[in-house]
Length: 200
Image 1 (tube, rainbow, N blue to C red):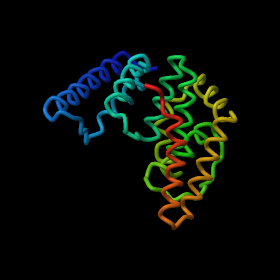
Image 2: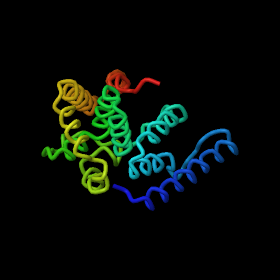
Image 3: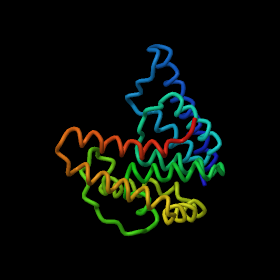
Image 4: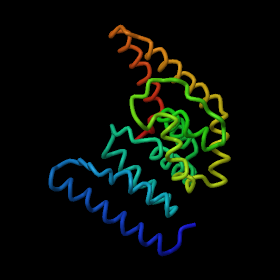
């Protein structure tokens, strides 16, 4: 549990970073956010366990950064937020989206042994090494209740089927040379990912 001092400190930083983003929007007419403040704000909400505030923030984020792919930890924070606000169907969608952003994150959290499936890694956040680097940093997110719920989601047919399909399609893509065939496979993967996007 965060202390009152920690809560006040994070609340001040949240307000400061929100003001910085608002100023950027006023001055330029759009958000650049090269510092990644939009991600840090979500982390601060989670660290002080203000999941009501986090939910409001994520709604704002989705509206203002609709094409932002985020990163695995960010999706996990979003999942925990939805879980804490008892939006379990949406939380399950977000958990599966988290899994597709990094295949190893959720099983590692749950203590399931994982091996590298051998996909071409297009980003430094999608591999097993990334999970090893951030594992300690996300321990605060995993409450007992959230762990048990996440374990149920992980074992569900929906989770396993979507993740298996994603791995299969990605492996097929890695083995394709023809540009047209690759384009079709990428569309299949995109359709699968889009099926997990939360409704506005």
